[in-house]
Image (tube, rainbow, N blue to C red; front, top):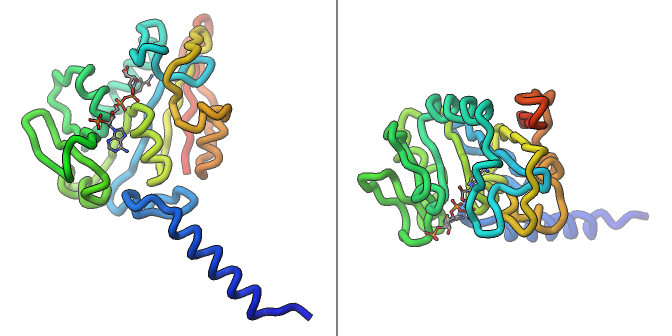
Length: 217
Ligand SMILES: NC(=O)c1ccc[n+]([C@@H]2O[C@H](COP(=O)([O-])OP(=O)(O)OC[C@H]3O[C@@H](n4cnc5c(N)ncnc54)[C@H](OP(=O)(O)O)[C@@H]3O)[C@@H](O)[C@H]2O)c1
């Protein structure tokens, strides 16, 4: 006979263990399901054939960028109510259009509004509160990374991820798009493991081997 009390107790224990494993700063579900009200969160990256967003020096080589992807990416940023960037990307990418930026950095305690945008540390302020303050009308949140930012939003739950790949570029020892890629997982496996499903791949440049796949929840 099955011991129902034992099974229920074990299930509760597993549930509590999982709950304790949740990142405190995300406030979100175990499967990456997005619980962020009023916002649609969409990641954007162009990766090398080996899943890198930057080379071994930490810089993004011009060869990785592609004009067709760049135009698409810039149009997506124009549509967004808010653009979330890591501090390094913010500092190395000028903002001539004055887009509304949320800069992730551990150098701030919580959320600060500065002349160059909102600076945010998720250890001090919840994601929902940061988004509500920086984009009170809600809407589209574009997340161009880099890696630590992508990892944070994988936990929080992307609604979509626009993954471009430049098959003509290899960046050994570079910066992987997601931390888990350093353990041998492909970007696709990471997205799939976080509840996203691939749309049809679009060929942006057949000769250069540049494709775009939009992953959606
Ligand atoms: N190919 C692509 O699509 C693509 C996309 C994005 C970036 N890039 C390139 O990748 C390179 C850099 O990427 P990266 O990943 O090293 O830098 P990054 O994400 O732009 O910036 C890293 C910084 O962001 C802050 N940060 C990241 N995660 C955080 C978290 N969870 N909480 C609080 N702060 C956090 C930290 O700032 P503090 O040090 O201030 O605490 C960290 O040092 C650049 O060359 C960039 O151009 C390429």
